[in-house]
Structures are given as C-alpha cells and as structure tokens.
Image 1 (cartoon, helix red, strand yellow):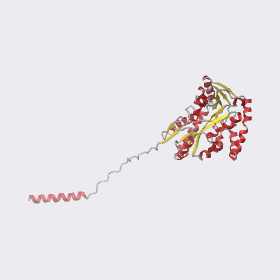
Image 2 (cartoon, one colour; image 1 turned 180 degrees about the vertical axis):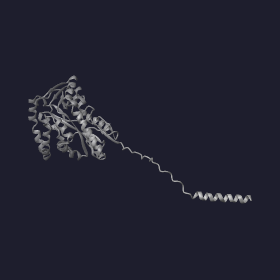
Image 3 (cartoon, rainbow, N blue to C red; image 1 turned 60 degrees about the vertical axis):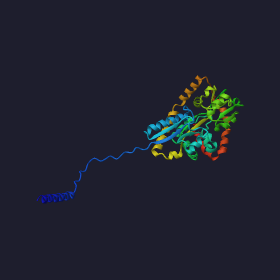
Image 4 (cartoon, rainbow, N blue to C red; image 1 turned 30 degrees about the vertical axis):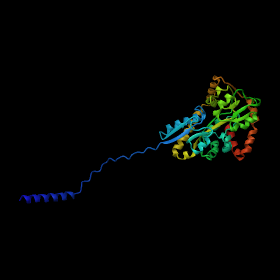
Length: 349
C-alpha cells in the first residue's frame, strides 16, 4: 500500500514538471529608459611649429601669438609643439626642412632663395619706400600680392600662412651711411635682394646668416649690416655697433609657411581656423605701427646708439643711383617681372 502511494506521488510530480516546463515564460515589460550611446570626442590634432630667430623677431612674435590663438580657439582640438629660436629649424636648412615636412608650420624668406623662388625672391623691393602697410592690407584680403606668390611656394610643397613685413634696409655699423662716398671700401652684410643695390651705392656686399652678424661686427669682418631696428634689438647688435642710419632702403618679408602634406591632412574647419588666427596675429603685430618704431628707437638711444635718418633729398639721390637695378630685374625675369611689377608698385601707394 505504501509502495503504491509513493509510486503515485512520483508520477504526479513528473507530470507536473513536464507541464510547467512547457508553459511560456512571462515577457518582461518594455522599459522607457534607453542606454545612452557612448560619445566620441574628436581626436586631438598634434602639430609641430618652429622659428629660427629670437622671440623678439617680428616673425617669431606673429608665430607665437598665432599658436596661442589656435590652441584657445580650437578648444583643445589642436595642440602645437613649439620649437623656438633655431632649436629645430635653422635659416640654412629651413627651406628644405619645410619642403619635406620636418615640422608642420615654420618659416622662410623667399629673398634667400633667388634661384628657386624666382621673382618672388624680390617680392619686397620697395627701395626707399615702405611696403609694410601695402603688404599687410593685401594679405588680409588675400589680394594680388598674396595670390601671385602662392604657386611659387606650392612648387616646393609649402603654403604661406602669414608674412612678417619689416624694415631691413637700415644700416648699423661703426659709421653712418648717408652718401655714396660713405660706402666706398665698406663690407656690408646684406640679403640676396640687396646685393646689386649695395654695389651700385659703392659698397662691397656679402651675404651671411643673421646669427653670424654679431660676431662679424664685433671682429670687424663686416663694417655694417642692413637690419631694421626690430632685428637690431632681437640680435643685440647694439652691443657691438653704435651708429644707425635709417634709410628705409628695403622692406623685408619673412613668410610663415605650412608644409602642404601636413596641411591637407587637416579638416577644412581647422584649416579655416588656423588661417583666421594667423591673420589676427598679423593684425596684433602691425597695428602697433609707428608707435612700435618710436619705442624701439628710444630703446636704442638709451643703449648709447646714435641715429641719423636720410633727408628727402638724400633719398632722391639713392633712388637715382639704385634705379638701374630694376632694369636688371626686368631683363632677368622677363614676363614674371612684367606681371609682378604693377603689383609691387601698388604696395608702395
């Protein structure tokens, strides 16, 4: 009897288990909360920038100000590793280094590359007439001067972002240079664009890296160098020479350039941001204008320098002496000069 009851209970449990296992499981109620998708921040763009001159040089000032603006305005999307004062780029190698992309943003002067940059090497030949305001205003609007230069830089894989336009045709040495007689027998450090004009004035021009000027003046290797007050101060040339002749003989340009390969990797919105920041950095520098020049001249006077400026009559004599040089440029560059010269003359107005 007990065995029969036990068997009955066992069978009953087995049947109950089979029934329950076949019942559908209750469907969970749908939830109104959705799991948020993870947000992805744009990757930080890391760039390398470099200057080959001291921090006080105009092109170094523009570059460092632009870097600060870019990092602030990009809100962390762009981070720039800055190498100042020839710690990465040097004047002697900057052109080739920028072409191959040693850094993403750097600088160079077309006037040091007459063989490769053609007529653009003479892009600042506003002898005895300043082109600073003209270049600045043209660059802000991407005008004729800016457009004319682009293909020359592009041929060497560079894109100009800004231009530091400055006085470079003033002379600092151990005497004043007012008349052609003052140049006779004098070794004058100059740029490629001024070699022939110095010869026409009666001097013996030599080209050397600005980093060599201090020692050259100190040792008497050169009698004078052609630099504007800004670079005289930046290179501390006032420590080894005390006579400055203000001539306005040349307006020099140092371009801040991007390596084209690096540039094309940037998103379009970041390209636009970088361009805008460089324009603003140029404005910050150029808007000082005559006040900056006066401040620099006051500083040089305090350092014991004597300063003389050419009179209008003396400038007219220099212009008459230098005028044949433009015929040389026209003959050398042909159609290039024919296209460029009208643009150059507009910059002088």
